[in-house]
Image (cartoon, rainbow, N blue to C red; front, side):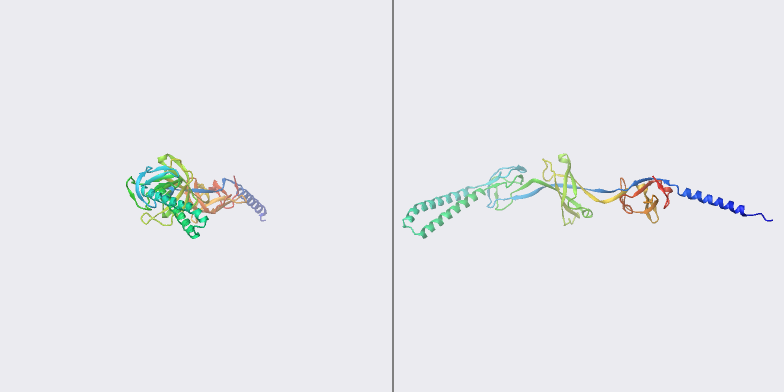
Length: 338
């Protein structure tokens, strides 16, 4: 009589079913990891250049009729106020012209006064009166012109600022309309920098900047980029860029030199710890926790490395849960606790 094999089969089935239940239980046990929530941040890039301070405007000053200098009333690089006399030329001829014009005006006025009663009595015709009135008007116009000519023998500051000139002295002859002085408008200042052609495309009008002037021991002077030149220097391959100084110090002067730092806010990016990135044959990857609480390996595209981590260009989004520690034991679909 053969022994029954039924007990043996039952025993084997019980053994294997227990092993499967134990394995499933072990596989479903959550793995402990450290997780951080990804937050998109904006980064600020800094570009540093040597800068030269410039006045808001350069106003050339000249005399319309020229002449021989009789007095230089200011010193070079002096601060002046609107209406201050800067220079005088010999006005002898202008005064003589004015005196002659005044004499002609007096004569015309006297003739008009003497003739008026005669015209009222009908002894002088209307045509003669019109001729006298015309001569009187011409005499008045001549006086006005002579007075203006006399005023133009003095060079007057059209506004407040800093006046600059080279060599001027009494007895020197200056030609008509020749620029003899330059008035610098100190109501505002700009800084001129020269940017290499490889960097000029990164700059935009409106970018924030700070200026440092060692001569004044002044740091963090606020400025803003206002103009980017369109023509490069053929020798240096740089573009001129102007920056408006928003808060100039009281003792700031043109031609002072300093260091300008342009601050440009880059587009929003995700920065993660560098240790979270795993390099695989198909590219860099990170582990994240999906909405089901399971681990998921995700391929990412990396940007620049920074002091606080590495920039992620794609693959991660604001609010994703990134696994920062314990990912060595993970696999796709593993339950995660944190």
